[in-house]
Length: 430
Ligand SMILES: *[C@@H]1O[C@H](CO)[C@@H](O)[C@H](O)[C@H]1NC(C)=O
Ligand SMILES: *[C@@H]1O[C@H](CO)[C@@H](O)[C@H](O)[C@H]1NC(C)=O
Ligand SMILES: *[C@@H]1O[C@H](CO)[C@@H](O)[C@H](O)[C@H]1NC(C)=O
Ligand SMILES: *[C@@H]1O[C@H](CO)[C@@H](O)[C@H](O)[C@H]1NC(C)=O
Ligand SMILES: *[C@@H]1O[C@H](CO)[C@@H](O)[C@H](O)[C@H]1NC(C)=O
Ligand SMILES: *[C@@H]1O[C@H](CO)[C@@H](O)[C@H](O)[C@H]1NC(C)=O
Image 1 (cartoon, rainbow, N blue to C red):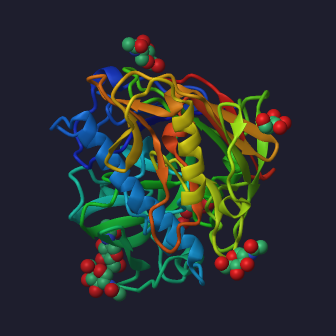
Image 2 (image 1 turned 135 degrees about the vertical axis):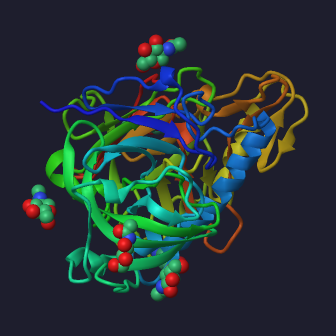
């Protein structure tokens, strides 16, 4: 029986710092550890401490760009699986420790379940952070030529020299890369000849500092490339923001996944095959199912409308009519909250301690009830509490509901792609 553990840290800013030795915990079995952005273990922690307000506003600002980006994908007429997946506009939220090459070099790659891209900053990279993969030191590294079938899956490949090279944009970044292969080990199993973009040049600040690991369903994603090993099955438990020990876990493969778990079908949008759509059929606040027009929740492959489960967005975004209904009922049920204030993109904040109702997402076949920890963010000073959700960014493509990482924290979320189903069960991993 194979089990696998990885270290995962929440990626937030691109400042790479050394690992805190206390955080360098052993990896064992099939579970990888997760660290939150504020964790002392996060190598991406900013050296300049952000205030709570600054952090929240920064995360929400990033979310807005990301949700706009995800929305734009689903509305596109033509699909270029890898290109569009790499244009994501913010750093994904969690990173995982990956060993690359022979001998192995460790990189902390950002984990993103809505993306298929795999890329690593390589030696000589202009504009990358200081931690790069020294491809020249690896005996198993090779650049793929233009004849390689994988080269057909990257956007606008060019054949400089003998390599398959490509350029793309990623948020406000541009990225130039060679299509390359090397051995990658996430847990204990080496994946030989893993195909990724070896990044040679980047501008802007959007690219995750040490690379990206797409856990989407598309053809060049990690999931597809490790199909023989993990059978397109994984689960994660994301740790909370405020926990001092920030360990969560990513579990790869069908072995060791929870047996007692409720499932909802995964839906597939052929125009955006890597996104994990689910069928959200209603939303309950406390005991009341709020009045949301069915069109706000309906899955539509043409418009891209529907609901996705995303690990790279921090706060859940609902289309405006759904959000408004949820928020209004939430406000009605908060007793003694006093005046409702706003903070940045959050419009339901209180300056006194409140008792909040639960919010339940009613999926086909499964209900996910969120307790206060998944719903409220509190200022460190204890003075402000906000409902940690917002309306989708106000643009033409605001048809996508995004169930984001804060609402998934301390749940095991199981992606069972072969059986087209998503499982969720509470699991305190903070
Ligand atoms: C990328 O490809 C070019 C063109 O073949 C080659 O000159 C260069 O050395 C490659 N870079 C890396 C890091 O392999
Ligand atoms: C890709 O980017 C590199 C580096 O910025 C540049 O030299 C090259 O001309 C670009 N290629 C294409 C096809 O745009
Ligand atoms: C990986 O690539 C090398 C060199 O191209 C080849 O010899 C080897 O058989 C490949 N290994 C696997 C497992 O595909
Ligand atoms: C944090 O987690 C590690 C490994 O999971 C554990 O060994 C350690 O005792 C924990 N530390 C605290 C303070 O809980
Ligand atoms: C799906 O969206 C398209 C484009 O917005 C729209 O024309 C169509 O009526 C929608 N389908 C359903 C079943 O609502
Ligand atoms: C989910 O909750 C709804 C409304 O409260 C209830 O009718 C339904 O049976 C529940 N579904 C499951 C699968 O528990």
